[in-house]
Image (tube, rainbow, N blue to C red; front, side, top):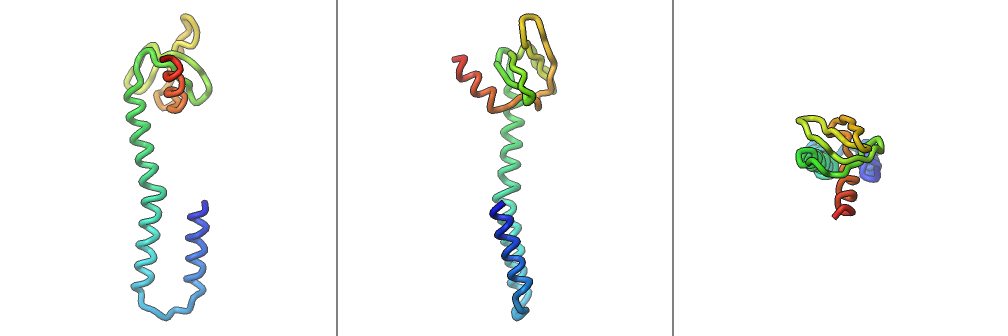
Amino acid sequence: MQILNLIQFILLQQAAAPKKGSGMSSLIFILLLVFIFYFFMIRPQSKQNKEQQKFRESLKKGDRVVTIGGVHGKISDVHETTVELEVENGVHITFEKSAISQGAVTANNAEKK
């Protein structure tokens, strides 16, 4: 949020400043904004998406997981886009892989070891 406020302040200052230069300074400013957005917003998001995809592919039978809805269970079967959780003895529920919370998996599996 602070970065967006800073960018908004700079844009307002440039709009209020008298026009006494070439368009080169405006071009440099726009390129600087694109650079900032790429390295502070776009790049980290794409990195996080890659980590989540890798995480979903690494789910295996026997992992203890927590869904984003708060359901605790142990993976009993893994399919292409879904996992089957055993939440109680003999009770199995099917969830999308995207519904598994990444942070809770690593914490649960660290406790198990």
